[in-house]
Amino acid sequence: MLIITFSGTDGSGKSTQLDLLRKHFERIGKNVAYFHAIEFSLANRLSRAIKGTKTFTPGHEKASTTASPFLILLRKTFLLIDLIRFRLFLHVLRQDGIDVLVSDRYFYDSVVNIEFLAGSTGRERSFQFFDEFIPSPNWSFFLDVEPDVIASRERVPEQGIEYLTRKHSLFQSDVKRWDLIVIDGNGDPEDISRHIWKRIEKTS
Image (cartoon, rainbow, N blue to C red):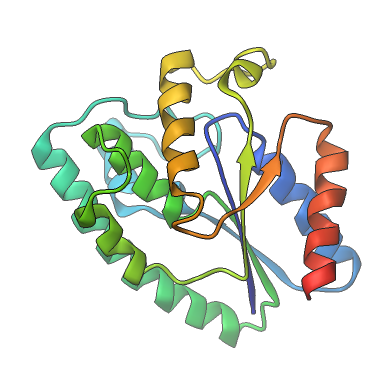
């Protein structure tokens, strides 16, 4: 089973590219499953339960911008649990005959979120500890979009330009750490999708 992930700051076009890629695979007869790391997260599910939110809508969830040391520790603990759950999830997908898993955000994004809340540069050993437990995807794409470009789009993340800039910087510092394939996400979505598909076809 192929695992293909899209990472990037809020509003960078991950959901759009994932949907276009899913259609590419379905056109050639592949069984495709969808994954969203934030929706899968136990921490997020607990937060939604406390708020009384029954559904999860990608791109419409309000991201946390601050957290106490205790909450950061709690998020780290939940992340380890999520990684165990994810391996079980992959086992079930393989049994169900799924050919491709496409991920809107991945555990890399979860780590970046915790790094952001902790005020991390992304290089502390305590965060790199998680790398040993994250299953390596076949392709991990980072949609690199400048924060000011995101801020000029029709649907702008409500956290603001400073939030986008800090998150973008964290991702950039971790590109080599996770061997992310950097994709210029500033252009036309269809052109970006064709470029991604060619990359996958070339190395399949």
